[in-house]
Image: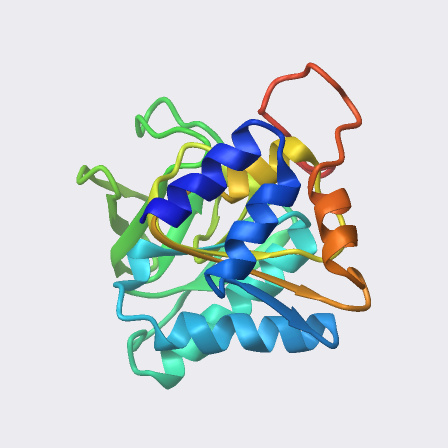
Length: 231
């Protein structure tokens, strides 16, 4: 869409005010009374989407938000009978997560043996105790043994860093009071077709405060690659 390209261009120039005005004019900016309500609003639109699950991505800054959003997405998909069947448990680092057929996943580290990179997204085609078969978004099919310490996570929601290389039809961005201009540009330029930004008046009381938060630039002149504290 033209407005979507205009948003991305505005943030690429560091013009957060213009980007916010464009989002607001196209009814793609949503303010809620609290963070929990903004998450509810996000999932209302996410569930109503006509796009395939692999063509929707939720983006957030904080790892803990990403974890909660991924868990919520899986609950929704189970309720919609999009995720069905048995689950297999996979332990990576300090987390133990369940996976099932049709789950979206993201690789959290580069794996040369599998020829996958940190941030590659995929869809699980089958899961069992000793075998995970999946298709990368590039179309390539691979298989690995879940007992081999492959570092993956659920891929419905992503940090800004993991989303850097993605081009997704529909992007939902959760803003909870903190960003930087680099993060704002990345998160608000991943969309191909549609984009929506969700925030709340506790973290972000006004439109002007939203613009200020989105254009924070603590490291002037550094690259777009931004790692969250835990990454």
